[in-house]
Image 1 (cartoon, one colour):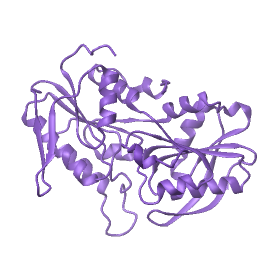
Image 2: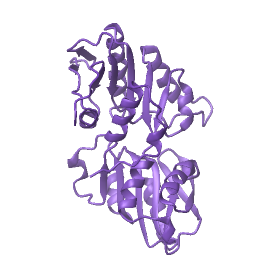
Image 3: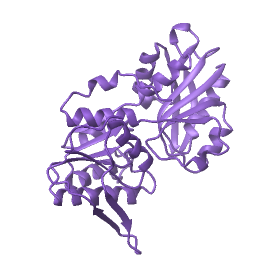
Image 4: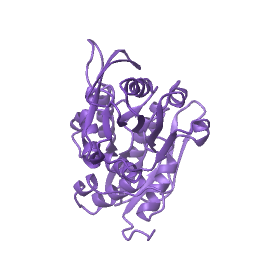
Length: 328
């Protein structure tokens, strides 16, 4: 990759997903900035910048995946350090936005933690947030600073088109695992020229899903389920079984954020899902995927790298919602 010409663009990686940060830096043509992020013996986080950022446009790469609170505190402390070091702009790139599922009061006396996180990032001094496939798109409105909300749909579409998915053949259908994901499924279906189906689901308590029925024609079809987050994998695996019970010939699945907590990997491995495709917004150690040959990954680094360049050069991001990226 050719070196990027403007030295005022600087990237820093914190601890949650350094492999992704390195890929983004390589795609842009810059080196990651020098910074030390450590913990004292009592768990307090320490950040030391190893180079000047005065007058620079700085981008911090950090997903707030597990350990969520440590990774969030790293962002806040890093933003404070950059502000005190006179960075021109501080841009927080959060491929995965932790606490996004707490976006409303579902019951009395509940907090709206996604809004609290937005308040904290703004109060620390961030100028912009870049994120991917928020669980609830309205979280963009929780901020009073610009939020660039990227979508993984073009990446997934490119991957599946090269695998022969094409709704025009009458055999492929894109499936939303619940009503909340219909717009996400519709976007992917538009890329693949495919119809959509919806799984009617209810959730009696967190991380527990009960499948009701399938809305749409899936009999004799190859189904592609799409979701934003796979956490314990209860929803996606129950949905896959429901599709098979309705006569689907095969079931594929994709999701942007692979949280993969608890029994997730075992559930996916023992489910009817032929292939589960995840992006690398969350760093998943290779050892964790041993024994799960039906779980694959693609990288969002080309998309995020292009977004950073467009932001830095004051170009619109809208072309990125249509562009195809070729992941090898």
